[in-house]
Image (cartoon, rainbow, N blue to C red):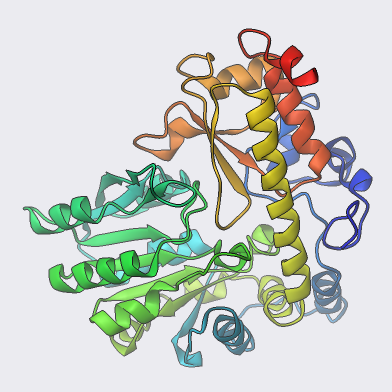
Length: 406
């Protein structure tokens, strides 16, 4: 990939936010006024992979826009990708369809734990988890990630001691929603931590749903560990929810998979209502097949650009944003920034939006220990990141902007 193009070979000048705002109609480009730089939602600015564009156009030209009755070609496409990238052997009959990952999570909970109960979340975490869980009769128990200066980037890990206490103490935990890799930190959980979580889940009969939507975007020097094989080995009841939507920017075409860790979990997923499948988009299915089979090179280029953007942001934060701490991600394209010592008060997100005209994810919405943080999208042209930092630096107390220009 040339230094001046996105993964599809499109010049960065053509994915300038001012231009994209005139071409795209998703909420990223419509929620805020035109003078706001939108880096708040997990949508890429990159151009859709050409092979996926062709797959979508071909389905439309064939008038192939009806209902689905199962995963069809998506099951082997995903299984081959999981084997080649992560060494995970997925039997095709364990792959089930859902409209999106949120639907997969909610419907899996309904069939695995129909009486509801208590569900644990490691926080801060993807805000929509809290919203989707309003659909099911579960009490949310937040278990903050353990922060450790000695841990590798991004400096956090699962707090296994706290997780075990929550499982063991009355009234216990019925389900655990794992984010793997973890959003917003971009943390690729260590295999030993996931194995211990699986052991604890088996011991205390906790149903685990592992949201692995960001797994295809694991950075090149990092190893991603799927949870399902570890759960199967430990005897834990578990499923994985995932999709091509984050790796290839396909959220709007609405197709995900729910994968059973073993035959016991597969028997649970066999109880999913038929609507879980029929509400899935046939266009999304074919886009996913193209992504997992033919757009792997595009994904690799996207990861390389995200890594370069992460390095750029790290250098700009060090030079221009005194008091800000940057949790360097191991996966995904989301940067987690701690503004608590930057002098913008208790609500840096609001100050940055109002005064710098940059829309970021508000850390307060991510659960316990998220306040004072913001989440920034790295899947954009490098100049977009520079512009965002320039704007933020200009509103920091003191002479941060002037110092960075010297």
